[in-house]
Image (cartoon, rainbow, N blue to C red; front, side):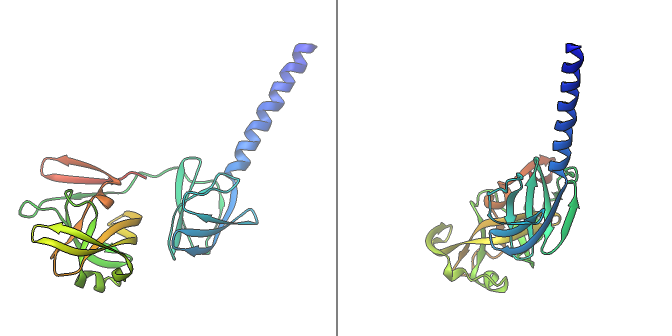
Length: 218
């Protein structure tokens, strides 16, 4: 009789455990406010103001946020939530990470992309520590770079004045990264925007013959 009670006790514990796990995944989530680097979430009727890296009691972590959408992580999986959209279901299984394959042109890897929604042509440059623009390109992209930190930058032409800034969103095809460091040189160089390691360092890069494969890590 004692063994039966123990068996029933374990069965009840297993049922309770699985019920708790199921409830943990089934959340009613809505993004009700978005700011640069912050988001207001409503989770099962309760509102939470999160900064990047902070989590709710349910374990939902804010990975990135801009004025249009938030990237949330739960149970090791990430999803993008547009402003105002309500999602009431289990988090979907992690999809294959987006990737881009580039072929060289005259020995250089050139690729179109977007910065904060504006189109720009990039030259892949693993020797550049950050994405780099000249002043004219930065103005066309609507970047208020003069508000950034003024720094001295050594180039092939000598010492240049530059401004450190942060880009809200940088995208190559389906690869999208948030809060990416960049520098704007107050002059005509570089003639083509450089896609530096502040972006490339967050990707898996692999050479397959002449082809360069870029894959988003997260």
